[in-house]
Image 1 (spheres, rainbow, N blue to C red):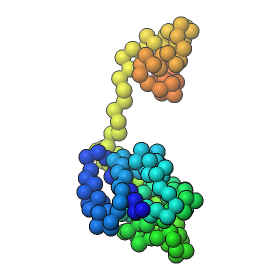
Image 2: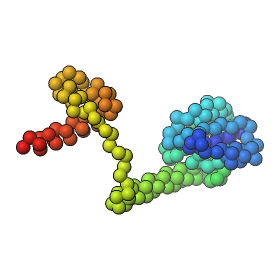
Image 3: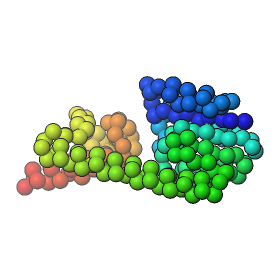
Image 4: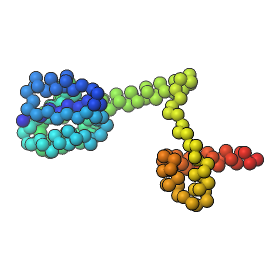
Length: 191
């Protein structure tokens, strides 16, 4: 049986192009996920992995639609291989039924991961430049109007740090960081 796997990163993105490809390849069944490929916890992917049987073929438009990093790609294809299911990626012309296909899968997976790392690096560099020019301010700090009152309750032992952070709707680590900032500011004022 030919099984197609289609993925787009958001619900707003269109799957038509990938679905048309699957139809042109004579795919019998298509599984579609509309969420990020950053991990393998995707409903349609998990359902497909549970459905495939020995002798089936899983076809994807490109390996980036199947997995976003080499580790996940190799683990997923290993699961398929253990079930004696063929993996085919159209864009990269990869077929895991051949030794060359298995080798190319590893290479393309590593290249795709490298490309994502370059994108992250360029994004970080762009943010740094924007910060230097004063055009990037980051996420605005949360206004903690009740901090002084809640801090006093916490300091006196009336409430725990967990409760204090819940009341302010911040994480405990943020609460402790704010405590340090608050205490440092107040020490400076006392002198």
